[in-house]
Amino acid sequence: MTAAGKSYAFIQDKNEAFIRENLGDQVLITLGINFILFVDTSGQVVHHYFVDLVEGKGEPAPPGLIDKLLSLGEQVIHVDSTNPYKRHFHGA
Image (cartoon, rainbow, N blue to C red):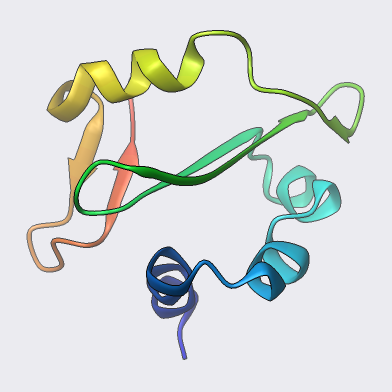
């Protein structure tokens, strides 16, 4: 299964093994990603994780970040026209 497929399956089944295997501090640091947010098609947050790239450790997301991103909707959410489940934030 592709990475996108595994992510989609995680949003559906909320499998804790996916979190352990794919969302640890070191994984996100290696990818240069400090924040990841999984939202289902109804707009409910399934999981989120924030890593301080300078300190190299996970910590709570800054207050209001998730609500702000969700409130911006299509202003910052890119939807792949070939796959409606493939979305990512940009320009926030």
